[in-house]
Length: 235
Image (tube, rainbow, N blue to C red; front, side, top):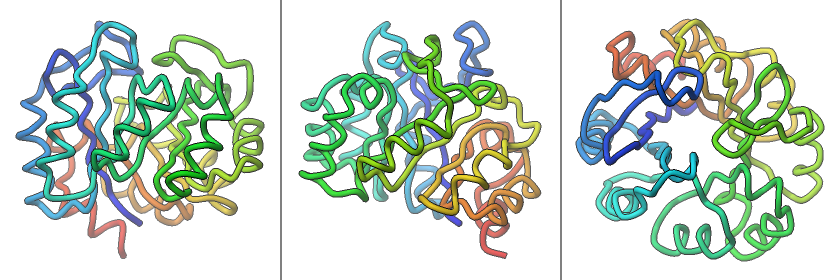
């Protein structure tokens, strides 16, 4: 299993939220510094999300582009990608993958176009959920569909990789939603996010069969090192 350090960007800084709540924000460092640190510590890929763009309150696109250009490792990018043009530009400029949430649900034909042009390895559909129901638009809007239903629909369009984030767990470090991802990992490549607080959580996700785990707050708070997380993912 792969471990993917997270860099969530708001107002030009690498931050962490709690369950997506804007007022529960903690500022950690410069995003470029974080990208360099995770690369030096052995990460193969980093997870970069433009929170301002996701929330419709601005953009850090220039900074994201700098990270994609300068990082010595692969970068998957999400947050506020609202059009086919946005996604295409990111992929053409060097992003290894784009992560699509709201756009995927509002314009599923865009997903088909991206799959056709760039291939299934570079397109990730985000299933952000609370109590099993998908939420979009920066987690503020109920999409009116369950994780399982959405998964089946996008699998039918040819999507093979999903980012599954349990909003109720995000930033809590009190264990990931293993049951949900275990059920999906048998028929697609699953990247799990939300709730990871230590090596035991990494092992649980590894045993559940997920392809990768996004780790954020636990790394920034020193609850786990990247080396420890990567080791637990392989044992």
